[in-house]
Length: 269
Image 1 (tube, rainbow, N blue to C red):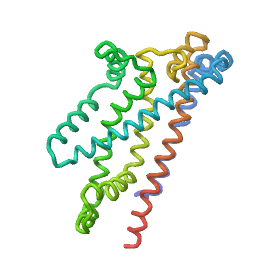
Image 2 (spheres, rainbow, N blue to C red; image 1 turned 90 degrees about the vertical axis):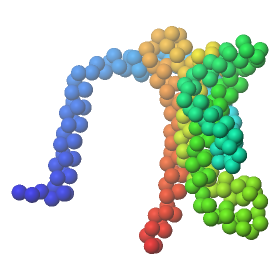
Image 3 (tube, helix red, strand yellow; image 1 turned 60 degrees about the vertical axis):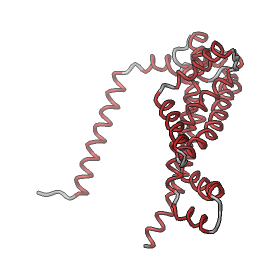
Image 4 (cartoon, rainbow, N blue to C red; image 1 turned 180 degrees about the vertical axis):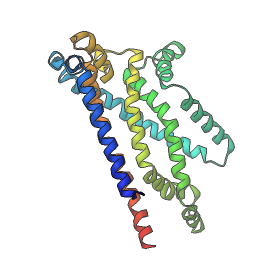
C-alpha cells in the first residue's frame, strides 16, 4: 500500500520525536546532574565577580571589538578598492595582504604586536592598542573580501549611466557604488563583528594589567580564585552572548529586510 507524502512525513516526525524522548530519558538517568550543577552552575562562590565582570570585562571586550571593527572596516574598504583597481600593483599588494592575514592564525598577530613590536621597534603598546590593532589587521582582510563581493554585486549599468552623465569615476564610486555595496554586505559585516568579538579573547596571550582584563581572562582567573569549577567560564560565556546574540538578531533582521523586495518583485512578475 502506497503512503502519501503527508503520511510519510508524520511517520518520520513520530520516529524523530520518539528518538528525542528516548535520548532525553537516557541522559536523565545516566548523567550526574548534581556534579554538573556544582561544576557549571555553582553561582554562590562566583558572586564576587559581579559587577566587575560587567563594568570591567564586558566594557573592555566591547572597546577592543569596537575599535578593531572600525579600523578593520576602514582598512577593508581600502583593500577592497585596491583589489578592484585598474593599476595591477594595487591588486597584487591587496591580494598578498588579504591572503596572508586570512591564512595565518590570528593569535600570531596578537603575539607579534604584544611581544615582537617592542623587541623589533621599541614600541610599548597598551593592551587596547594591541587588541584593536590585531583585530583590525586580521578583520580588514576578511572585510575586504566581503566588500569586494558587494561592490561587484552593484549593477554596472548604474555606474556606466553616471559616467555617461559626466560624473567622474571616483564620484560615481563614492556616491553610487560604495553606499549600495554596504547595504548589500551589512549582514555579513555584522557576522564579522561577532567573530571579532570572540577573537578579542586572544589578547590574554600577551598578558595585561588588571584594569585591561577582558571576559576570557576574568573567567580563566576565576577558576583559580573562586574554586567553583567551570562556573566562572560559564559566566564569561554568558557575557559574550550579551554581545553576540543581539548582533546575530540584527544580522538576521537585515537579511530578512534585504530579501523582501526580491520576493515582492517575483510575485508581481
